[in-house]
Image (tube, rainbow, N blue to C red):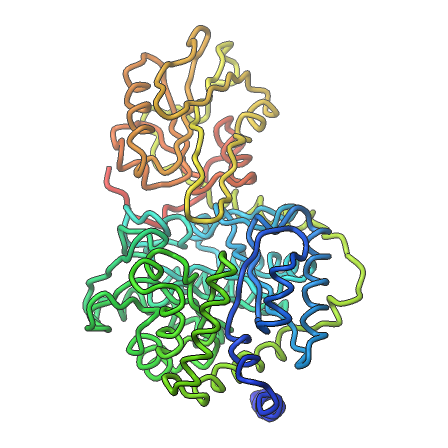
Amino acid sequence: MRNENKSKLEKDTIISKKLISKMTLEEKIGQMFQVGFVGTKVTSGISEMIKDYHIGGIIYFRRNIKSLRQVFKLSNELQAISINQRVGLPLMISTDQEGGIVHRLIGGTHFPGSMVLGATKNTELAERMGQAIAKELKTVGINMDFAPVLDVNCNSLNPVIGVRSFGEDPFWVAKLGVAFIKGVQAEGVIACGKHFPGHGDTVADSHLTLPVVKHDRNHLEKVEFYPFMQAIQAGVDSIMTAHVCFPSIEPKEDIPATLSYNVLTNLLRKELGYTGIIITDCMEMKAIADGFGTSEGAIMSIKAGSDIVLVSHSINKQKQAMEMVVEAVRKGEISEERINQSVLRILRLKKKRICLKTIIGSNYQKIDKKMDEELAYQIAKKGVTLVKDESNLIPIDMFNSKKILVLDFFLKRSSLVEDDIENENLLVDFLREEGVEVKHYTFFEGKDTMPSLEGIGRIIVCSFNAIHNPYQVKIIRKIQTLNIPFIVLSSNPYDLQAFPEVSTFLTTYDYSPFNLQVASEIIVGKYKAQGILPVTLKF
């Protein structure tokens, strides 16, 4: 089998090199860019980027997805435009389908996030989830998933990774991450480990500023690098870079991994032996845009060793970045041989993973979600975690005639995920289905007026990243002064560190539907929580 794979790779290399020799410089550089656009239909702007700028890939966000049938049609039309160009190459069409708080595919199964899998410590479930997600993506013409997150979340105050990580143990992050990758790639979809060399031990969000990880090389090898090293051995198709500085690897001040030759070429390529695709995180994030600019950042990243530059939003910045890379090659700042190296990797991966027969001209096949939803439920059932219950408030007394009051918070949209947070609290519906009489009240920031507590026997307060939200902490402290037993149900286990004296704390790790269903079933006593906390909490 190894000889057959080697022979196929050699054959694909010959074919790809022959094609590269016929491509213009602009066509080659176009393959090295993946871009985003606004709209659920093909726009004149994205059509221009394919026809005139020869882009190699497109990233979908929620703004592009209205329904499964719609996104299938969109993918078909975009691919048809691309393969009818002179070179006739298919597009890598990607999205971030991690599960949990990063769920793009409206109409697809909303799986629990990575930290729920971390709480299950079950690699079989991780692999099955990766495979199920890949099947759904493939059905609508998405051939690349920017998942899994391989960051080891060692910092409870991390504002951007947190529950998107499998946990704080490099061993389990690697085990579960590799299993997820195997599931995705078994379906012929491109998996992407992110964010190399590791975004897990930061207290800053690279969407907003430039974080720094100051650990020495020995620590980095044992913690941050380890999951990526295991993923490389497992044959991960692509790796996304982190807009994070690592002074022990890159001594030049304020040079993030995305722009560092020491990180991407010396470390990732030469030391770790990675031969797959290196793709940048979005070059419009402030960690790059504010300090270097998107266009200059693109040039620096290609020099450092990136194969694909991701520019997710502005068409003007996309055009400018591509034009400046072309100019940099013409001036000799970047060699054309360096461009050819990346294009060769891209073309080989496209030949390996993208089968146009399953997209162009085919009819939409409705996704049968029954098995996927059952899998999502099983993951939630094994992952939702009762961290503490010192007052024995779970299960609730179903024969008590008093009502349950569910309190939650209106959530503002953030910079993180374009944004996938939904304000509907399904816990209320699930509790009512279990026969619980529920009263529901939502707090809006700046207001702390409590609803009427008449007839209320127990309170369930739903926190969301309270560790980063003083307003939520203030409300929970106010609830503590009431003479009514209460349970905190949190989407972030680290929230407990903001109010460690709370007696009963149940974490779902995220508010995806099956996690909330399981939480309701635990609360009413159908079964006991099974999850094992994958992070250390101080309480």
